[in-house]
Amino acid sequence: MLNLLYFSRALSCEGVFYVNDMRTVEWDDQHQQLRLIDQRNLPGDFAILSYGDHHSVAEAIRTMVVRGAPAIGATAAFGLALAAYELDVRDVEKFRNHLHAAAQTLLASRPTAVNLGWALARMRPLVDAPAQTVDEIRARLIEEARRIAEEDVATNQRMAGWGASLIDDGDTLIHHCNTGSLAAVDWGTALGAVRMAHEQGKHVHVLVDETRPRLQGMRLTAWELDQYHIPYEIISDGAAGSFLRSGRVQKVFFGADRVAANGDVVNKIGTYMLALAAHANRVPVVCVFPTSTIDLSLANGDLVPIEEREADEVLDIQVKGRPAAPAGARACNPAFDVTPWSLLSALVTEKGVLYPPFEKGLAQTLKK
Ligand code: MRU
Image (cartoon, rainbow, N blue to C red; front, side):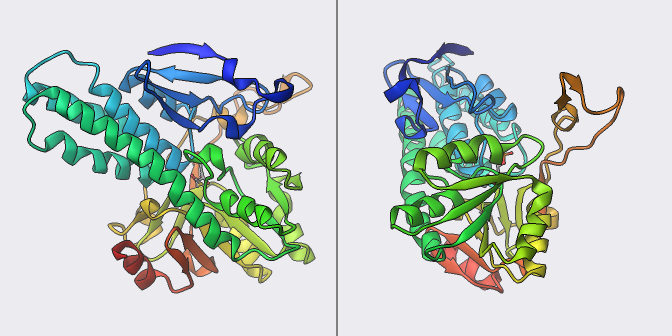
């Protein structure tokens, strides 16, 4: 259930909310609720939504109140912790069955980002470990969800350091989708690296592609860059190739929702076209992601389930107050695509930088 909609902490100086005023995903200990920044209407409307049960958390993930691979992983973990407060029983087995069903519901909310399954897989042994009372299991779950959230921030900061080492003073970068604080508990992935480079005093200019159809680039990345005082210009997705050919761009940066064993990257739709254009113009392509995004169980990116979202996301554009598409137009809307590893120049995790070929390096990185 959505319990509360409020704007109070949204007001910081000058009545404007800053992304650093709150984490994207936060546990409210006092009310035992999960608080999420509602990303659907940013930057125009800022709202924080509170959640008290796992069904509404799964719906928040599905409808993209919260989005970005690490953010939905942490959210799912808190969703499972919330499920532990839903049932007032003493029977431990009955309680466990409820939690396993809740984990399934959360897992089904979005299929592509592996961080969701990764976070739930971390929680599962705590459900099944020996326990005398249901309270013991409850305490373990909330503790682990909090640990996942805290680790996310520390991981992202480490990763940002490695990513920043690949950015030179004076670079112009093309960035795809939103990979910043909003895509994680805090800091994010590729945009975290850009932010770190900026904080190190490097002059960085970002060409923010709009990221059709949901405009995570234009709406969310531009909003974050404003707050970090990093100069940027928004470009239409189709303009990227021309900028890459012009010689004005030194690197392309993006994140990942799942990285297969061979280094193929599954990320927001449009990543593949961007990487192709960069590769054709010899512009380095850097993908930044935490090790929780690596899925060694899948040999290559073609095995990753690609989410298909509603056609309305593509069609719902108005020109002068009228629908841009003809009445009855159909659309298809794959939310992610596969970028083959051979188009990538470097993969950055919290454990360091990998160069192609990636297969051995990814396996070793997970063992470290
Ligand atoms: O559909 P979204 O907005 O959840 O997709 C997000 C992305 O594709 C990001 O680029 C990805 O999660 C990596 S950055 C955290």
